[in-house]
Length: 278
Image (cartoon, rainbow, N blue to C red; front, top):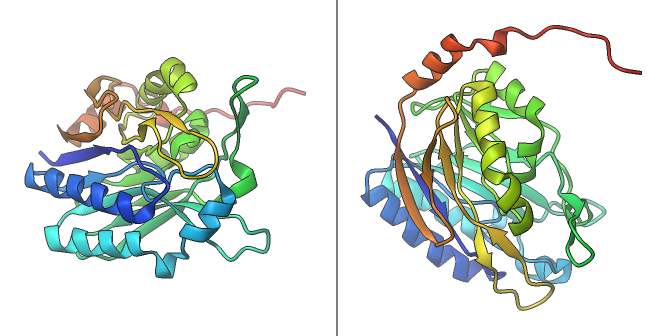
């Protein structure tokens, strides 16, 4: 059976520092037998300061984190899901991209996915987020065939939009990736149940590497994330919970479990048209 390595990080707002940390965990995952390694959302930089991001982020073609991780995937001969990188876009409004990359063992980019759903919420009087102010949303769903399974790419807040996951599964995805930097308050209440629901609804494996803890930022606010990198089976079972510590979890998975779950409950084939409510 193939093995996936899920990396839990506590990224700062310094991309160079973060690169050294994530590379050590990728090396560890490969040494422990993972054929595909997955890192969290905003692997390169966790920052709430748009000014700081303008100073430290790069365009995709110039991004040192992306280049280094491509080289590392080639050296190790592993598949690598970079959960996402914060990148400059050149858009007139100055917004960034929150972009996930699937890198092959040849070091080449096999797929890109820009986060579609922006985290624009007010959780309390003291905690609110307006992701769309700094990031432009993506517009395209992505499924990529690999020898380790067909992978549907998503990011964090996407998990609250089940129609996206249904579409990915109906387009052939057997594995759904949900790299995240999930807020602590919503993480405690919703993170596991949402991931289990997406797995059950689609009969897919769900792999969700996360950011965790209090993040070190030189400018802007102080971000806290939930942690708990999770691997969920197509039947909705929790195969791995990484807790709140940084590190690497290795999970075996069997793609036959996807066929079994979808055969037992073939709901992906049971869509019915209905009249919308007025």
